[in-house]
Amino acid sequence: MTVKTSISLTDEQEAYARSLVERGTYPSLSSVLQRGLDMLRQENEAREADLAALRALIERRESGPFVSLEEATAETRAMLERKRRERASL
Image (cartoon, rainbow, N blue to C red; front, top):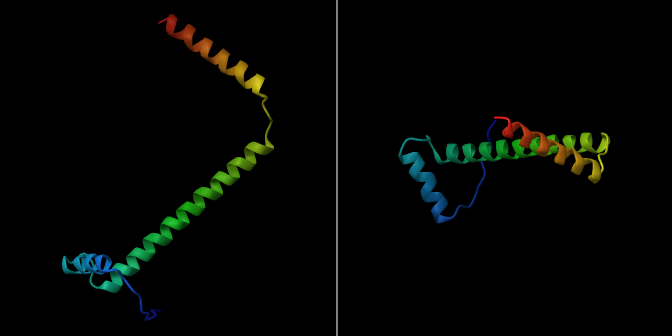
């Protein structure tokens, strides 16, 4: 189903949309605007999916075991020392 509506464009937006139609990229101004809205919807859906994934990761991390700063520092130093020894043995 399609719905007719009235919109306002800046002169630059209208000129660009018309140029896309004149080049044959799109069959009509409506097609240009429909594609733009589809792209905007897809972008927003992708952003929402990314945010949901980040929220899930944060929740998973928050519910997992907590490592103190001292433990993390000790583990990092041990890892760096292992890497230095590996390089030295090459």
